[in-house]
Length: 455
Image (cartoon, rainbow, N blue to C red; front, side):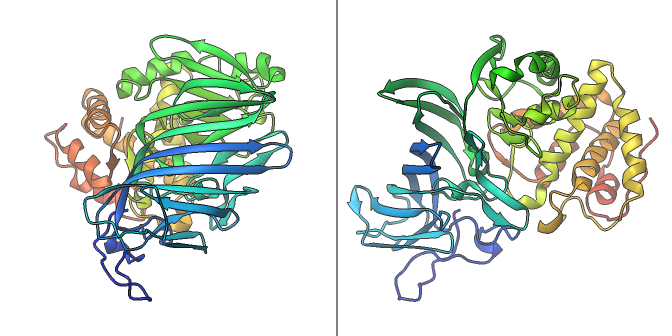
């Protein structure tokens, strides 16, 4: 992350050091993100051996210096070893790797405003990063692997500036054994097979936060669900095809409904991956979602989650929070999208669902501030439900026409950008002559759950 710090390190070398939140580091994840530069592109060349869980990688980061850089850091999990580092084609003067940070001193200091590239060769046996939210990042499956990075797991498999506001384009090349299918964010640019290995190359042009980057490898086959107006593809084991038809049978109708309500789908295509293993929860990634075999029960038992993950393509992936305290802008919107889909599909009204969930949340502990829930509770279910209830209260206050115009304006104005709660409040103010100050004070900044307005 860019920062204002221009302190000197312990050795007296000018260069950015991790600073306090005012320097640009997110206080919810104070050890993630890096000062002094901005990454604009990642090029990842990965070779993964499924049976041995061995990853060999080369990452090229294209960046711009914000400060004078005599030294800078990137995030990379300590369980991966680094074998070579160069900056602008010159071997780094020195580098050290400990406590999840790769510190790099280039052969020649980088002046402010200069573009530069960093090449890092690394490898090892990838595994998740353990933290307050459990294990996140690279995960082995029974036969294959996936990556579930939220909020700080990207560094478990590639070197990065792991901050949600640090968005960049990607090229991800995955080489693995030929029987396996490999998928990553973006569009498949080309695929080539040599001997027993196949390389899959994906281009993610639209800017993407590190936590949304992913790869998925497994014994899968591809199924085309739709070609127009948005190409939708499924990647899954053959044994789940029949059940998939039922569970994801309304995926195309869901896409039509959301593009109508939220505006154009923000990416070239959408991919649904279903693993051969069970997963505790589905996994959000840019341009794709990953579900477990348990979410494919043949009875549409997880359809609300199908809607939830699709909605994240607008709310979370195209529009991405600037700081984790604003997580309700992702999860509240995706949760409300579940209710909107149920309403559009004729299953139940959003109002009935909102009032049912309001009764449940009212019986829970009233100690959460939605717009700043704190790192320990930012993934609490109350953030999801109170966020959705906040949107329903707004809809009831300003009316359906203004509300859906607001959603489409929100996704259009901030397409591919980093956003804050204040940004949303500002857009909402343009869609009503009413003062919304009391609504925001009660729903976003007060702990007690307010009453919903009358329908």
